[in-house]
Length: 182
Image (cartoon, rainbow, N blue to C red; front, top):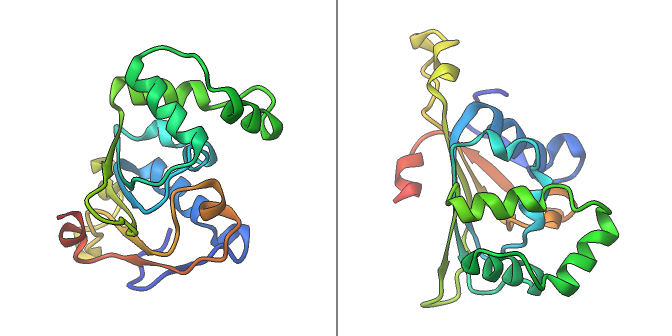
């Protein structure tokens, strides 16, 4: 991972995908905050195996979610697994054993992943904000002035397609991350 002022992520290739970028962040970060106009559980499934390294994921999303995601959120609120019907069947088409979905449900129930819905107006924001682990900073000399974290801001929603297939335009922000957090 380079520490440049400007880094463009656009899903043009797997090497420049939002998925690759966020997976790298998950390894070196303690927390990720996500603002997304459109949320789909597939976004978490794309990061499976790496998002679990984070201590906390906070997601603020617009009120528009897919049927599958809405059902997962409802199931979590009720603390039991049932009735994922069509959303589960859709996921089975791509992932026969539903790898990752039980982990997502458990993280939602334990509040490792927190979701809030912004429903006062249409919420169309897209940002991924991370805060590096302390041990990550220790590997760099103080003169290098490594930021506390990065933000990725642009057009990518937190969906499977937004992280992998859609042509997007996102830029890395290294300074002013605290302002974005507010």
